[in-house]
Image 1 (tube, rainbow, N blue to C red):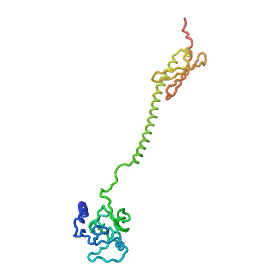
Image 2 (cartoon, helix red, strand yellow):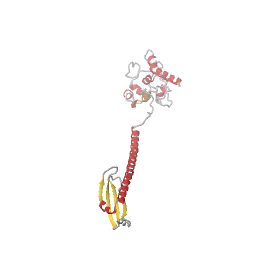
Image 3 (spheres, helix red, strand yellow):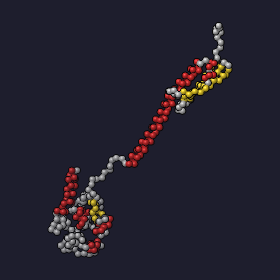
Image 4 (tube, rainbow, N blue to C red):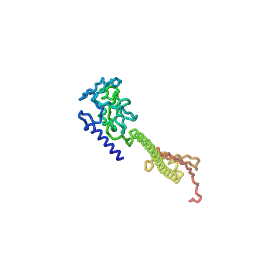
Amino acid sequence: MEGGARRLHADRVDHRCRHILDRDDRGVARGFIDHDSCAREPGRGGGRSRSRRRGLERGAPTHAHPDRPRRRPAIDDGRGACERDRSGNAVARSGHAVWPRLRVILGHPDRSVPERFHVERADRDGVGAGLLAPGHDVAGGVGEGPVSRPEAGVTLIELLVAMALLSFVLVSVAQLNFALARRFYAVSGGAARDAVVAQQVNQFTAMPFDSLKSRAGTITVTKPPLPYTRKVMVDSLSPRLRRVTVVVTPLNTVFRPDTVVLQRTKPGNNPFNKP
């Protein structure tokens, strides 16, 4: 692993410096044995015009300069343009070699192509389409930043869904708590109501028989713990028998009213009660 890292950095140094510092007397990087100047480029002595380059693409017969070596054939191994371990000549499309301008950008043709460059057709490149004829290969940079990695975390959609689910659960729990609180309050009020009813039963049980009629009617009690309304009805079933109905209605509608019915009988004369 460490050896691969050293080779990677060494290759990048060679790509950046070798073709700039190692030049011959013509200003051409050594190792580019078939380098020639492009048209409309400084030092175009010996360079071909655009029309002549088009003639070469169409296969027109030309005569090479006697002092200039011939171009080497193109290499195409079928792999992608951004692969690291491959020769610079191999990035050219089938049947064409790497053009001089492209070779200067990529570095020594016998070394690997830097990962930050890729090769594409000139007609798909904004700059190459204006400088080179259609069909030429140009180099494009893909950046020198770090390798992109999937960022860990959550997205906005996931946050919204989580908040919606949490809100639904909290609302359900709140409704359950409210129902339980009302139930407990009703149970506590029921105990107070039962105490009031027991009090009224004891009161009318201990009351004299002849005084029952005077207690009939409706009254309202506002004292805590349970404000209520009491309604008393006294029915005479016979001269010696009366029915007393007591209805206790709490003022709070949460509590249900309660009704109790009792019968009172007039006691007979005491035979021992003589003057």
